Every structure is written in structure tokens, then in C-alpha cells.
Image (cartoon, rainbow, N blue to C red):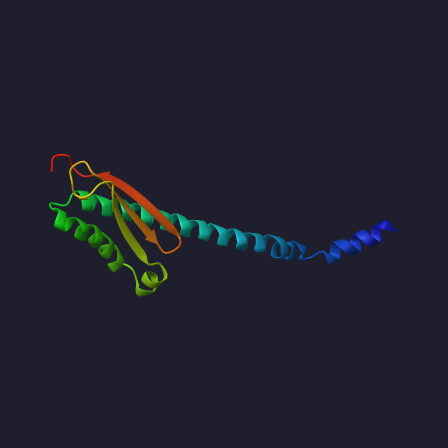
Length: 134
């Protein structure tokens, strides 16, 4: 009696592996792919903001004069923005803030920090010192 039931079940199980794959595995991989994409997006935004903050503060402290320091720091941001599309610029606005430990900012040995925020995703700060032999 057991024999005919197993033969019947073996005949009717054609395609069950594909059905199991579609039902169980495919949704898992879809969620996994979305998760990896989100992590990649967040890490790229963080790398961008770190790099921009470092470049902006470096442009500030290596400026030949105090009048050009702020202009050069903002020029780094403007050059970066010029390579972005309009949609990207609107969806992820880039803001730069320069803070100094003492005033005037461009005095020798002064600690200067640049904070760059890109949209809501990331915010980074880089710090440099103005050259002591200015």
C-alpha cells in the first residue's frame, strides 16, 4: 500500500524546486540586494563628505592671504558641485562651515575646522592648523 503513494508523490513533485526557490530564496536575495545598495550609498556619501571637508580646510589654511582663504575653501565646494547633475544638487545640498579656534582665523598656528554636510546622509569635519611661519 505504501508503494503506490510514494510513486504518486514522486510523479507529482516535478517543479517543486523552482517553486521553493521563487517562494523562499528570491525574496531573501531581493531584500539583501536592497540592503547592500543602501549601505553602499551611505558609505559613498560619508567618503564624499570626508574628502570635501579635508580639501576645503586644506585650501583654507594654504591660502596665500586671509582675503583669499574663505574664497578658496568655497571654491573647492563649487568645483565639486559643478560635476553633479541638477537633480543630485537639489536632492543632496552641500553646506560648508568654517570654524576657528581663535580670531582672526588666518593667524599662525590657529586651529581651523571645516564641516561639510551633504544632505541628511552625512556630516564630516576636518581640522588643520595654519602654518606657523606665516
